[in-house]
Image (cartoon, rainbow, N blue to C red):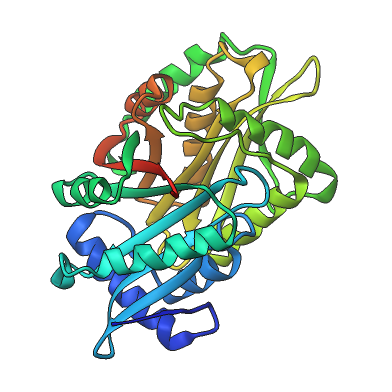
Length: 329
C-alpha cells in the first residue's frame, strides 16, 4: 500500500483520480455529474473559493484504489478540517479508507485543527465506517434535480405574477460576471445571508465573505468550466441588494446545470423574493441556455422554506448525504 499526495500539475495522477471517482460515482450516485480532467485540475488548483483541498492517492501494487483529501480555511472555522474519502467499489472493506483516514488525521493535527468533518451518501456501509471511526451524524442534505422539460411554464408564470404583488418595491437584475471590482463589497455582504441556512447539529461557525473570497469563487467556477448566471433582487427605495440566486451551466456539456446559493437578506424576507428569483432565473436560462436539461441543487433536509420553493418548481429527490463530525482526539 502506497499513499502519496498529488496536485493539479500531476497529469497522470489527475487521470487516475478521474477514473477512480467515475467508478465511485457509478456505484454510489449514478445520477451525478461525472468529473472531467479539466474539472479535476480546477478543483485542486482553485478550490471552491481560492482554498483548494490537498488530495492523496492510495495505490496497491501500482493500481489506484482509493483517494482522500483534507481542506481547511483561513476565512473562518479555524478549528475545522474537512475530510473527503473514496474507495473503488471493487476494493472496499480492505482497510484502505482507514489507512487514508490516518494520514488525514495526521495532517489535520499538523495544521492545528481540532474538529473533523466528512460526508457520505446515505448507506449502511457509510454509516458503519463513520461510526467505527467515532464520527456522528450531524446534518442530512438532500440532492434534488429539476428536469426542465417537465416544468409547467404556464403554472410558473401564474405563480410569478402572484409573487410580484408581494414585491412591488423590488426589481430583479441580471448581475454581470465577473463582478465589477466596485460591486464586490455589496455582493459579499449579500452572500453572507447564507449563514441563516440550517446547519442542524453541526459545530460550524458562520462563514466570512469578503470581496477577495467572492472573486476567488467566481474564478473557481469559471476554471471548472461553468458559465455563471447570477440574478439579484434590489430594494428600489433603498437601493440595497435584497437577495440572489446563482446557477452554473457546464460549457462542455450545457445540458448540465448546478444551482448554487439562493438567499434573501433578513430585512427583505416575506416578499416571496426566493420564488421570484428562481423563476426569473429559469426565464433567463431559457433564453441563454436552450440546451439546458437539468439543474441540481442541495438543501439541508430541515430547510423547509427552500424545499417548499423547490418542490413548487418541480425538483425531485435524487439522494441523501450525511455530514458527520468528531473531535480529532
